[in-house]
Amino acid sequence: MSGFSVVPRYSPVEHPPFLRTDAANAGLKTIATAAGGAIRLLGVTIRANAAITAELQYIALTAGDSQATELISPSDGETSAFTGIDKQASWAGSEAGVVLAAGSSLYLNFVPVAAGTTPTNFTVYIRYVPCDPGASLVTVP
Image (tube, rainbow, N blue to C red; front, side, top):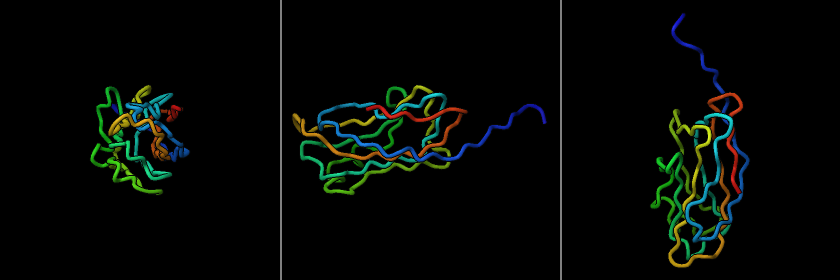
């Protein structure tokens, strides 16, 4: 059995839910970064804790360098998706998921209708699998 190596299989991790209260006009915000090695994203859910302000046009969720991978599109993250408490937008990856290399990040993009300074109120849930020993996902306030 030469020519290949066995890669250890890691168990999925439910990252502790975390709160985001960015202003509707916050723009692109880093929300989490892979640390200590690569991780494989399995799913992300963004849940409204309150009805979202009319100042917010949409949010979008992207991953990787230069936000190369779109997980929640602007049309899926339109304000109409968050008209009340418990309204949600989600992305669920395939078995393969989306790999974030060490140092790569997840981003939320807040796009306002106008000035949009009113705070939003979301809880973010992330499920992932470490690809390397010691790999984890670190949230960014």
